[in-house]
Image 1 (cartoon, rainbow, N blue to C red):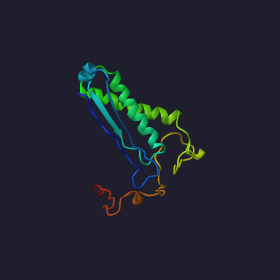
Image 2: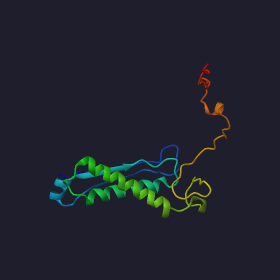
Image 3: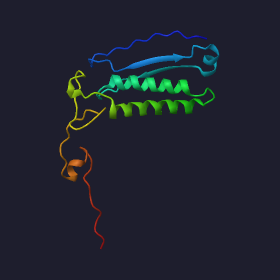
Image 4: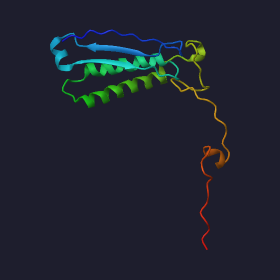
Amino acid sequence: MRLRYARLTTAGPVRAVNEDWLDFWESPDPLTREKQGSVAMIADGVGGYEHGEVASRLAVEAAIQQFQTTSSDMKPYTLLRRMFTAACSRVHEASLTELPRPEDGDHPGGRRLPGRRGLRRQRRPTPARTSSARRRSAGSPPIMSPPPYR
């Protein structure tokens, strides 16, 4: 059986760049397709990270490539694990070596932490913590020491 599909994705109301990526693959050979199956993958953009649209595309491509090269007798759980591992590894490798730096002006709205490379979460500054009283969350009971032994 051949599958027909369509795909549509949008940037949504928050981001200027669509960071989602989706793809579909099935073997052109009917016998292989029947034995191996088909795969549809979507990577929701790595929101809050620089180059999320690139990371999404790399993740989907790596997962599909793993699906294509794996034997059809592998258990689905094992195959999914390998696909996700391949996707994560590919994105991590690219974050260390291939992705351009946003301070070069290549990514709209991108913000970079000084001295960092690759995909990094945009962090909010946190206030300095100097005492245990500040580390406790609001409304938590005060830390009490046990009574002295007599």
